[in-house]
Every structure is written in C-alpha cells, then in structure tokens.
Image (tube, rainbow, N blue to C red; front, side, top):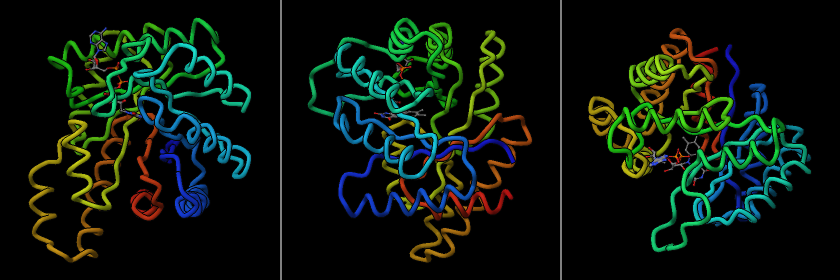
Length: 274
Ligand code: FAD
C-alpha cells in the first residue's frame, strides 16, 4: 500500500473534540504518514489549528501537520505561527493562499501561496517540508488551465517540496495535470486528494464552491438511490475505491484523504484497497 495521509478540520466544541479523538484513533490503525489540520482563512482558527496539531502530536503520537493560509493575515501573524509550529516539533507544513470569508475585506500582506512558500524558505531554510495545493480541474479563479499551471510552477520554484490536489472524481484529470506539470519540468510528487463521499448534498455544496466536478453519471446514480443510505454508501465507496486503484496503478505517489473528521467513509475505501 502507498503512503497515505488524512486531513481534519480543528474541532471547536467538546463534542467535536470527542468525535475528533475517536476518528483519529480509528484512522491511526491505517498507519498514515501524517495527519494534517486545516486553517480557517482570515485567521478564523488562529488558536484551534495549533491546538489541534499539538493534540495530534502530544496526545496521539502522530505527526500532526498544520495548514497555513496567508490571505487576510499579516507577516507577523504568519511568523508567529511558524515559530509556534517549530516549537511543537513540526517539520512539514501545507502552505496555501486560502479564500477570504465573504464580507471580510482585509486582504493581508501576502497575495498568493507562492509568496508564503518564499517567506517560509527565506526565514526557515530547509526546516519545513512544504506541501502546496494543486488543481487537476483548474483553480476556479484561474483564467485558464495553462496559466494556473504556471502559477503552480511558481510555488515549486519558490521552494515547495510536494503538492496535494483538490479532490476530483476523474482520474484522467489528475494524470493529465501531472503529465503537463512534468512537461514543464515540475517533478515534485503530486499527491491526489481523495474525498470519500458521505453526505451527497454537502458534497454538492463544497464542489460548487471549490470548482470540483461531480460527474453527471455519479450524480444521477446517487439521486436514483433516493433515501436508501446503504445503497448510496456502497456505491460511493465503490466509485472512490475504483478511482484510487486507477490512481495507484497509474503511478500516484501517495493518497491524501479529506476525512471531514469522519472515520467510516475513509475506512470503507481503504478496506476495499487493502
Ligand atoms: P494559489 O496557489 O495562490 O492560487 C490561487 C489562485 O491565484 C489561482 O487561481 C492561481 O492561478 C492564481 N495565482 C497564483 N499566483 C498568481 C499570480 N502571481 N498572479 C495572478 N494569479 C495568481 N483553504 C483554507 O482556507 N484552509 C485550508 O486549510 C485549506 N486546505 C487546503 C488543502 C489542500 C490540499 C487544497 C488543495 C486546498 C486547501 N484549501 C484550504 C483551499 C485553498 O485555500 C483554496 O483553493 C484557495 O482558493 C487557493 O489556495 P492556493 O494555495 O492553491 O492558492
């Protein structure tokens, strides 16, 4: 089995923390390389992300990896967080631009993830292994795929070590993106981001916001199952596991799972891959 990693959002309430700990314990059984924790753009999880990373590292003995977004933040805030993560023993970070929450006007000192990568390299040398985001179906704000790829290249030139993709349900989009990147000389590992399907209407909303395409045939099948939750779960697991198998056979270097803090949908996929 390839290296795998899991992504979480920081729990905010006691109830969410209990669920988080339970999910982490279950997924730990799959021996992940690391577990990462998202960061609310504009600083909305300024304290929760470091606390959750600390919880993973100290309570669970896992390589907890922070996401860090630069939009809406000042250089000083970013510097403070980087020092805090070093003090926690982190040597890997997921560096992103983020999206400003609607209504938030402050744009921050850094405009793009490439500038954040540069800041981390300038101030911390090779201490951090830097992961960046990649978009096989093109970032929704990019004018076209080629320009987006050049912007991806700028993050690699600034010092990114590897990339994790936005989720997708079309393996060909990943292969094409990886091959186009390679043709430009971008040879860092590009790890597919996998979103197991648990709640279809929630997925629909996420996908509209982040520009990920849910193929029509998947959507039509899901709709046809109506309220039959077991049938939906079984179909969703089959579809995602089959795509993972194609990705692995096609040379994906690792798989990164967006867990949404739930163990079961990810475990179901991993059990089919075992
Ligand atoms: P960038 O690489 O900066 O690109 C953003 C857009 O700007 C693209 O359209 C790009 O083409 C364009 N661009 C880049 N450079 C330039 C330039 N020099 N001139 C003009 N245009 C340019 N969001 C969160 O808020 N918190 C998280 O924890 C989080 N985790 C994520 C994890 C992964 C693996 C991924 C793939 C995404 C994650 N996101 C997260 C979402 C991410 O923040 C958004 O997709 C955001 O819109 C783009 O972030 P980026 O780092 O890819 O941005």
